[in-house]
Length: 412
Picture (cartoon, rainbow, N blue to C red):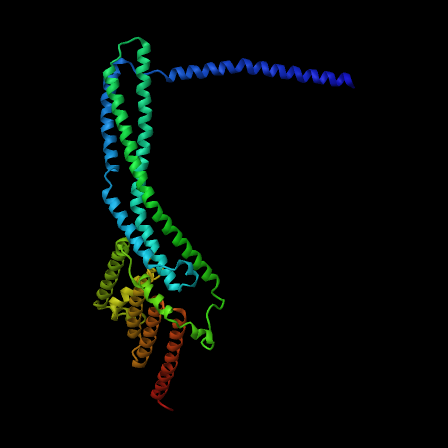
């Protein structure tokens, strides 16, 4: 048994020795191959290529300096960012009491979210310009550092070859590359400082948007939970304090004011909306003028071509809620009013009876009034009371209309 173990051990040691010997014989050949490859890579152009190559490099340096000059002339970009910084400062002064964000009205949350999101989108464009130029400078730096090393090693190679080296051409080229790299470093430093200057504003905007988003998510989870007092509770009436209305007036601007840049950001979509509406209206008018009779089901569209075109365009393009991203509630309210007026005019073209038209107008007016109260961000207790009053006014109005309609129907 012991003899067998000794034989096995002897075999293992012999195999290991042979493996080590093979590795020892192979590694030197690999090293020699790598050295040969390196030697091939170190072959540089001859003496006759120095002046032509220097001329080419001079032209390339001119192009690179033009790119660096563009990165150094971003005055308008900085002016835009400074204006946006001032806008952020004013917005921060206008939107206060962030510690109590959980108790904000939904419309105020949406208005603040729209304001900060709009400012973030406006700020991102000039910051992207700075980032693009900085990226270009870093690519130039990497490229010209390699060329600088190439010319240094080329000069050393020619000296070792024993030829007379045109030192002036090498020195002039290397000095030009050094000046270019210094300029790249200087301008790149300015761009980095500008990024650092406007970074705090970005952080503030991002933190505000994140806080509002979390609050809105929490409100959605609380949809089916009671979070207000009933009108029959004494605590409801204790909410009517002077601070309630003071805060409402102070925050009114964040919900009804259209932010700067809204029309500029959505100019293409607004123009498309107007053009499509005009085309559809002209088509309806043109079809109405034809001798071919109109179908009864769609004749109401031809009676109100502009309202029909507006309704169709806004409906198909999803203009009310989805198309204008980042728009404030006041902009959505304006679109809802236009959409509602167009719908009312079309319904009036469908229903010829005067009583039916009155009912449509009353409900449309109540709907617009309700949306208006929501947009201006009434405090919760006042909004509750307004909804109660609207319902209280709607019930007798509907009862009166129904009674009048019943009286107009001839008795059999």
